[in-house]
Image (cartoon, rainbow, N blue to C red; front, side):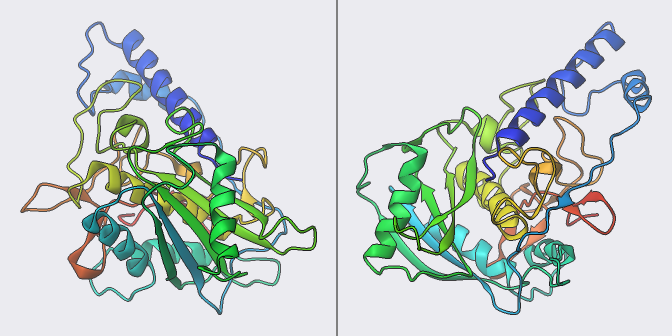
Length: 336
């Protein structure tokens, strides 16, 4: 199960480590974004990097030729514009977009992940159903176990089908608190039996919360000042919504994690309970030259000064996270 715990912890430690190195390396330290001294960089360069390898654990992936089917449950109050942004992201992942780099070229990296039969992760992702629970039937203070109960309720009501190629994603609004949200988690994916029956087939689920109010510096960085480490100037979000643009990053993270490690037997590094997966292994990297506290060199929209690294449908722009590429054993961004 991927719950961002490992990625958040890694990000926090990396920021604190670099801050410590910079402080001992220079008498006076500017805390502006790329203000890591040349001497500090040389010190870091003396430490040989640990090779980044996500081991394949011989289990199934979400492979083609069929599509990966997404079912969205909007929990709480979302505006039409917010729903449209998220829906356009999913449409962009599976679309042929002439502009480059694109959300589909980002997703194409998952095609390098292959199972034991040499089958690649499906290149097609489609939204197959959406429902809304605007009145918050289980309240606004949820346990993590409530996410599974919400999904099962939709299945029992036949609002969603039981889909072996599907992932059921619960998206919670900005005023909904979910256990461990903003503490060590921005979202997670998991697998559960579709019903309480012992013979029930397993399904995939995911959850992502809107961090715009509760913790933008933790779950919507770099569109907000970081919660840990030296303060940096926030970037302007490409869709004008810090919370939802942050959600796009986290949705992309769990989507890639679910496709490449759906049942904790796919590609990951470390403990299966807190694994580093396709995206979380590359936390904080969005463009070339990225380092802790700096997302990398990005494209800038001339009209809005918003930062992005991928084009989408309906003239959308997105900031998508780096993903580990198994053929080169390295993190790759859309701008690589």
